[in-house]
Image 1 (cartoon, rainbow, N blue to C red):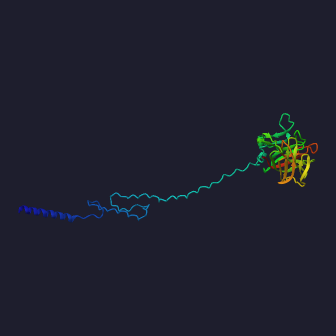
Image 2 (spheres, rainbow, N blue to C red; image 1 turned 180 degrees about the vertical axis):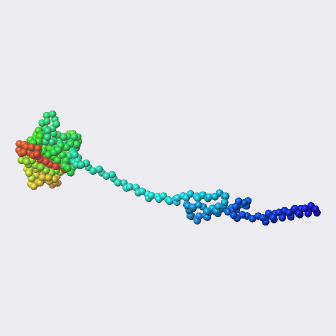
Image 3 (cartoon, helix red, strand yellow; image 1 turned 90 degrees about the horizontal axis):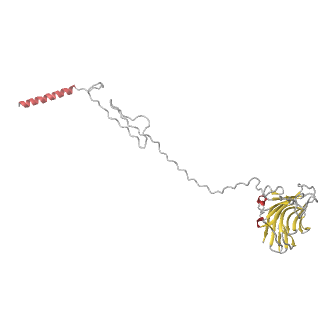
Length: 334
């Protein structure tokens, strides 16, 4: 019983002491130094941004601070610029195929008569001195030199490049068998290397020339524009005397009057057809005459063969001349 009484007394004493301690405790509200524990407010978490919204770019997150506790900052996530889709350019249509432009012709358009006329089977005789050592005959231009030859004013092109000019002055150099000067083409074969020579009785031989008489010599206004020649002499020609255009028959100068009212510069077509011993002569497609001719060594000629010289025409100078223009020329044989 004694031990129990002492234990009871000890328990009562302990409770009395605890009660005294609890009765004397009073927490300080002034925030002065004490041994009281500090109550720390639980940080308020930031309110979530609305769905689909962006976190504000200014200001700080709302955090309740407790004294003495380091501030906890919730970092603001970096804002990324809204992704804008790059527009896709429309497909580029391929350019249509266009032919490259043709370069314009050079100034003047042409330099040589061979750029206008097919002169591959012709040679040219001019009313000027040749380049031989004797210098006693007219100049002759043959292939291949004729391709790139012009000899103004005796043989040249017109500005619009539709004709070649042939000019012969009364004081010009003449061939050995004539008293009259000429700027004239002579028919050749084999690319201009051989003089043409054919017979009126074998095959068909045709010359077609489109030309115009443009100037007659003063004192004796006579000019030949196209002709057939044989091994010895002319067979028939187109011959202008003043305003009268004739077709000749050998030495008969006025065999057939084509027109008595020819005007200088008038373009016309002259045509010879030789076959079976006959020569048919056409003017602008109309048959003018038919001549019976038996000859060999035949060839065609065309250009300006003046029928005047310093013995029968004045003035005797290079300014006194006959002239033609040839627009096209063709010699065929079958």
